[in-house]
Image 1 (cartoon, rainbow, N blue to C red):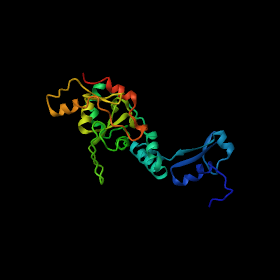
Image 2 (cartoon, rainbow, N blue to C red):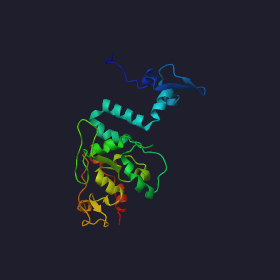
Image 3 (cartoon, one colour):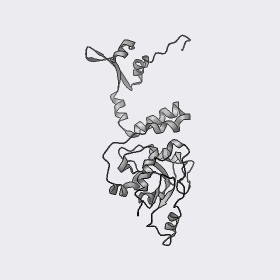
Image 4 (cartoon, rainbow, N blue to C red):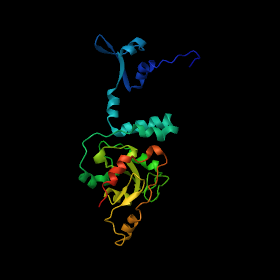
Length: 244
């Protein structure tokens, strides 16, 4: 039970949280690593001779990007639910790996909603929530209340294969049609906050092309929080690559 004269002792959890079996507290004595038997002293902390290492079981769990995302989600939802929108974006992981060429990314961008190694599984959900499941091109919103069913995709502004960037500011919520058109650079979001359409489109050919042409100079629907506004560098990347 907490008492009025209790002192803050942040060193104690280093030892006592070992019972939760997610880390092993250790100390260095004469160059040898030993299990920590007692709460560390201030002198030990200042000398950097005490530390904790993740248990093998926990290490196996944390190696999975999906499991790490679940753990972050659980901690934020449990202890900081009111700040969830601001916190979750801070913990998206930059994916590792070699970037592919722009030509190959044009072919594979359609896989934005499919999980793949290195991808942060939270990207799609955060982007869709940031835009309230509305397409940023024309505002269409279809979201069933009792299932994870929506007509909107989480689309990368700079393709993941190009940028390895799963931060939500590299994302837009787009319906299937506009996602497909942006993937092929027939429409591009610009730093000015409006859409530009490819001169290759001809409104006389079909109602579909007519709808895309009508998007020219129309504003992008903004996210509900400025923290999720599209990164300007990403918009510039897109604008330069319009299908001319």
